[in-house]
Image (tube, rainbow over all chains, first blue to last red; front, side, top):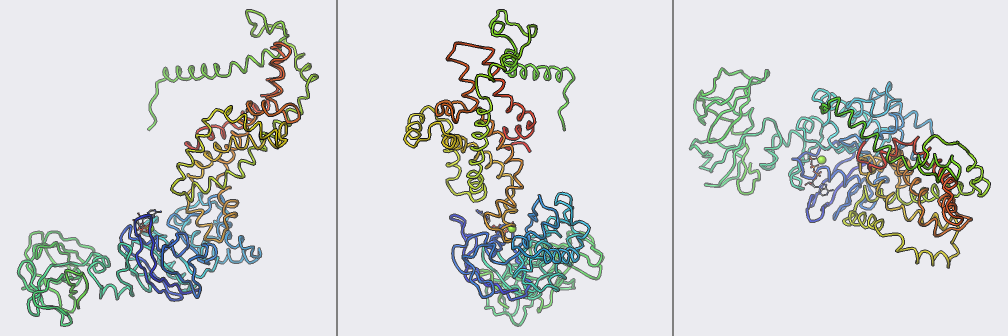
Length: 351
Length: 276
Ligand SMILES: Nc1ncnc2c1ncn2[C@@H]1O[C@H](COP(=O)(O)OP(=O)(O)OP(=O)(O)O)[C@@H](O)[C@H]1O
Ligand SMILES: [Mg+2]
């Protein structure tokens, strides 16, 4: 186990800058999830930490060691690939034991570690099969097993669950989290999936265009997104945004209606802002922002209502099962403490 | 969905395939038949196809006159030796081109292939002089070097196309697992590429076996392979068709048998990894 720290890491592919000045400190034993839109550089960052890509600037430390010029094989990192990358010509047992055998570990130790890992992952009955004789979920487990038998300093995961169906993904998510809780090995996990990020992470790193947008605990990111990008990226259904202009202690929306702002908002009269309100924080009232119901989607536990209000398409999540039909005219509001205020020019949070 | 092919068209296609196959095989068949004739019948017009007195006397004479086994062993050593040496260089080279390409890798591959388009005679004089001055004429070592260099571009190309099909992530996984470059090649890449390496090996053994230009020009006796064995029956004592045919049959028999048993691998090899 070890900490990982990145100091202004740069990476270019030819003329294209993929990572610009990444600074990140990951503590020993932490589970950090990297999220961001496709192509923002998550895999590249992970591969740089692994040593599979050479960085063009900055420093990478694993534990006390600066590893910029250390070969992948000597970094003591295990990686689980999206494609699993199992060795097709080796059975499950040899796939899992390969790293130990390369290190000329005593046979008894290899057998013990492989059987411990395969018991943990429920692979005992599959040890003699080749990868092509396994289902996707089983391959995924073998890939995990191959990583844990090594007992490495750091685990890297690059979208390990994205090839599984929804149900299996949920199961594996829980298993990986449980595994991390028992092994306590530092882990860096790349995903597209919000739910994975929110449920698994100690801390989430949100990236966009090769830049870290915000780092924080899942709920911290959810409750206090640092900018419009993070606000829109974290949370599903996504946050509602309204363009507004500051008018005293209130915000004037595009349709002229006014919304009370949180007391903490550091804004000036006439400033152009963006108001963000999460779907579950919007409520129906008698007065407030007028809106027209477009779609009503009952989800069971809650009802998702889509409306047109203040010249935006707005989503509202209601727990109380409102009786609504498309075309109904309603009024919307939100409590001041649930409102996020961002400066429109810089995109940064101002409350 | 498979295209529906009418019975009639299929029959015609099958017949055409057999006809073409027969046309290609006919010279070899004729050689084999001729080898069982007497010299007189070998010349007769019209040629006799099957109804003549079958005799194996040519084989006996050829056997007496020249040391067949020495030629065979030279052929084996030259073809297998040059192919193995070439693989030793080509596997790492193809690895680098497939998994760590640089900007000019494609150009390099084209350039390597282009050397095969040069007529070998162009290099004969310099190579001959080098061989003479280094005392390599009529030596197996020298000939292995020439055959190895001659086939290297093709071997690299074939392996490159095979390696291209292997997902790089598997090699990266091996690197993460602690494999050095050498172990990555030996324990991961090579076992995964076994079919490709095998067909490359086979095809190049055959190419080297049949290679006549360099083997005839650079050997006289000690290192002479079967090509020289055949040639020794073609000119000096006038034309002895039957004996020449017997010698040819003896020269191609081993490779014909090998080719027959390795058909599947060879087809893979010849299509340069295009079919799986
Ligand atoms: N080997 C490469 N050569 C050139 N450009 C590359 C290479 N690998 C990645 N890129 C580019 O770098 C950028 C970041 O790629 P990366 O794979 O890190 O994205 P990602 O965040 O992992 O995306 P995804 O979520 O789709 O996996 C992309 O624009 C991609 O086109
Ligand atoms: Mg990726």
